[in-house]
Image (tube, rainbow, N blue to C red; front, side, top):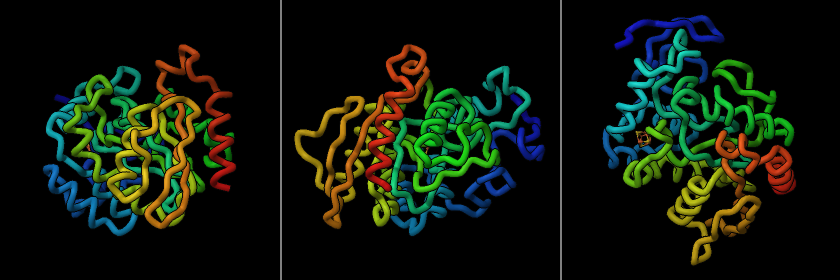
Length: 281
Ligand code: SF4
């Protein structure tokens, strides 16, 4: 088992892997006193009582409610690092949301990657998927720079916040149904807290699309039955609890499986984001 401390690639400060909360990791929203969910009922309680995004992100980032995912994410962080990153500390915790705390756009992904968010501690950061989505968000005017390599690299989002259906890296990128259900209250809280400023939602992939629709229903939005079906470029008008129409748009996920094969191209993603931009202003 690896017990070393390794230097953060941006700050040079040394960290154990997984990173203990409140020890100075760039963007770590938690402290040593942040309450930790140990089971699904705790997630319901802690997500439901979060009154601001900072509190929500802190609580997400220390969650331990899914035993299989906790074991996997921490095993990868200690002993399963990719060779190219073997000299880096791994976050090894859930990925909190990233971006504007008062977003006009919510981007909903699937789950962190073992050597991406699980290493860097920031959504879609440090892997090819992140290169794609942040470059596209930059072209659309939401991201400060067209990359996202490490927490602390200067990336900022203006008007957009990135969240996920599941916040821990799952083995084989496949969370179980129970794990998706356990994690769902964190997404519900993100939807609730974003509501006052929200103008559009972009789901990346079918799981993000379905997870958002389910969260919208649980939080009082009007969603047609039968449920709208996922497809690249689909746009679904949804009605919020305060009676506004907020469209949900869908894109194929920015996974290498889609981008390497040409199933998703930059013009395809740019086209969806251009429509999102029109909606969010
Ligand atoms: S997947 Fe979600 S609910 Fe499960 S441990 Fe991670 S953050 Fe907690």
